[in-house]
Length: 254
Image (tube, rainbow, N blue to C red; front, side, top):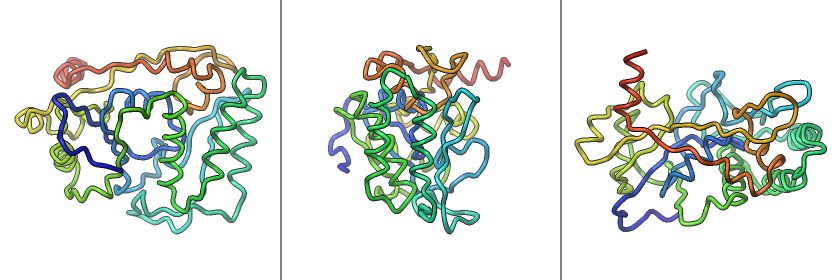
């Protein structure tokens, strides 16, 4: 992983926790980035928003979770230190779930090949597995070309919350920071603006595509896009961004 030596005139940065076969919205963040940082040295959350160790799969019986078991997890565990629990065949179970969910989908073999590629690679830690799954999807859709992918744990940048995100922007020479809407609750937008770093939030289009098992939903694993659309699915990885002022203004109006 090489840190860019010379910042580009316009250099966009995305920082996100590593996610297991992430939803299309995360692939869109990759598309909008010049540098993508896996935020692997922050605390693991076990709440409903957890997508680091589990992901939703759409099946004929409704939504199911594909979950990776962990060992040695405790309060305050960092994502990068979480070990996979291989005492059960969770890989086989996950593959079977996907195989049954997408039986008959036009590109099911492409999808299963990606899963096999990721599951067959050596991995001791959850962050390794999640990173590999994201990169497999990025390569499939051609989103890896011309971008740098880094781990926050390797960058030696200290701090917390908004200050650390800002420090990472400075360290990597970012002129634009692209993020999801959850950040509006803690980012010090003026701090970024004073330093010449534009903060932009995702403007998700949630582009629909032909999807099995009922009404379309975008909030499932990106493997769903692979199985249903193949490489042509890249057409649906198309969201843009909106300025932080517009986001905060709309939030205030609401």
